[in-house]
Image 1 (cartoon, one colour):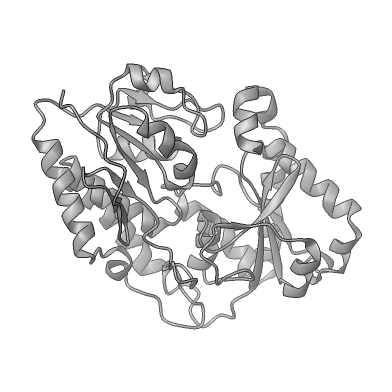
Image 2 (cartoon, helix red, strand yellow; image 1 turned 90 degrees about the vertical axis):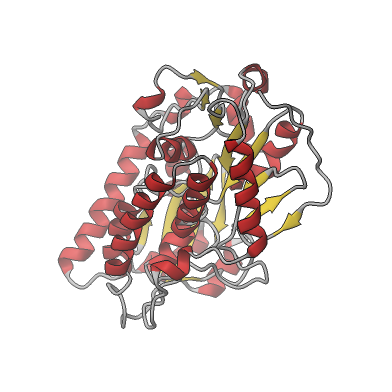
Amino acid sequence: MMTRRKITNRKRRVSGLLVSTMLTCFLVSGCVDQSGGSSDTSVAASGTAQSAETLLEITDPEEKAAVEAAKAKVAAMDEEPRIIATSPATADICDRLELDLVGVCSSTISTIPERYAEVEQVGTSMSPDMEIVASLSPDWILSPASLQSDLQPKYEAIDTDWAFLNLRSVPGMYRSIQELGEIFGREEQAQELVDEFTEFYEEYSTRNEGKESPKVLILMGLPGSYIIATENSYVGSLVELAGGENVYAGTDQEFLTVNTEDMKTKEPDIILCAAHALPDQVTEMFKEDFETNDIWQHFDAVQNDRVYYLTYELFGMSATFDYPEALEELQPILYPESEEDEEKARENSDNAAKAAEESEASEKIDEETLQEITK
């Protein structure tokens, strides 16, 4: 196994990667406009959608050079790289790319690909057991970029390379797939996945053209509280992809802490409720708050019965290959064209809330992970 020295200084920031002088790669938020604009997932309902090729194009020469260097580093190894995937979403990508793993996350809610059924588990996405991780002598650790600030210091403590995948949007996921395919010699598998997205997107991107964009407020629930999901979060990117207008657009942050008085000034047409974790607790919390907090009764969306619960498995923190189903669930919510659409939107919301309440997620989680979620 090749020995690595980690150099953590002089990192160059590029659109899709942060790369150190020793080629430690971070496939991060290339789809986020760091100047404070919106993400590049936009399909304005009243405008013209970007092409799939434009969404997925990687043009930064430094980023391309970083991928080429990482590819050469992997190719120079005497054996297949030892890879750990620390989240269900990254494990699913590895499965689609036909990559073998030496370690994979555990999950009480998400399904880990059957390919990794016998692979050593390294703990949950938010709190991997670093003793187990280190014992597996990984060459690469793959994690979602949303957890970079928490996990990077832990990875720096062991001799390995790592990549934080941009899973904040569907295009971001596919750009990461392209780069992983090139680095690990899975270009053919990556291209097949990209072609699937391109075919879907070229058809979907015209679906809501010419329609009026609804104003949407997205609440991301945590046990005991909630935050605002902007267009730079995965759920927010799905709403934007569908042509919805996020009432808190125009920031470079994924999530914001905002009081309900400020939310009222935005006067959203629609309120969407999603769960970061523990959907049973979060759904109960949302229902209680909407019933007992008087200010909600003054929102047009509440008065017009346009508050909807989203399916937990489809609207999480990371982009997944289930995005067509998620967009299909959003369609009658954002663009009801008949009573049947309105009934479908309400039925989906009721089913999502019921499934969340019956998930028993709170009973399946350990205390350490709960602390990570709520900190």
